[in-house]
Image (cartoon, rainbow, N blue to C red; front, side, top):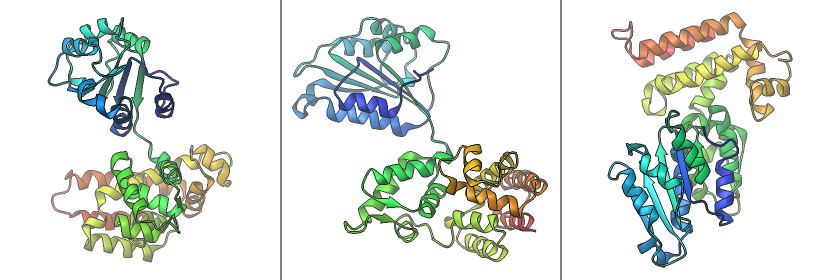
Length: 341
């Protein structure tokens, strides 16, 4: 639905060049990029002394489309333009007045519509067309798990820090694809780094994010990949004794994702090559594919299928299906035993 060429980077590039559009319709399931764009517009388009009169924040649950259109038609009081930001734009029911406004938008208004946790109804074709013709239609999509390490590396490098692959994977698997929380944790890490040493290491991750460099989901997966029974059971015991460090609810998706990709890896024509396997699995770096080369040495295709079935079974039982009283810790031990034997 969104214009194919519209990315977060392209929108920000235009904004920083002060090439403004009459409308920015920001929608999607990832709030992070919606907030970044709308916050930049709110903080940088107007001069500080203009904001009291020419910056208006509205909420979709409190206004009608007619009120938004009327506000957008006003002329600025202090400067060259006004900024109108509508949060929770998905709560505006009847959009016909806005559709009419967008056919002839006020050139001195920058209207920003923030539509989180969803996107425009595809049946509103006239409204979508009016948005595209008036300005920018941007869809903020959730980052895929496989893209998290690259995002973490770019985020840290852009701020003058380096990070090793193990630390990147630890952060990605512990925090996941909630970019708001992820960037907040990365900012905390950056603040802790001394000027003379801007490296993010497993020790830094352990100290600042609270992820043990020995007992974490990454190390558990590593133990399973390498079929290290002693290490895997030691980590599971630690998780059982320290539920906040890891639980079946956070570990199952990580293990399922690995074995699902391992199953796909078996179909790669050149599955012995890390480079070919990384491309086959759509990974950013051959380094990430080495666990799948190792996994194919340690697990047969049939065993991988059985493990995937067992993970689904444990997932169902962890949610109370066909499981009257087995605690999550015991379910996790059962899964690890089945996987490694």
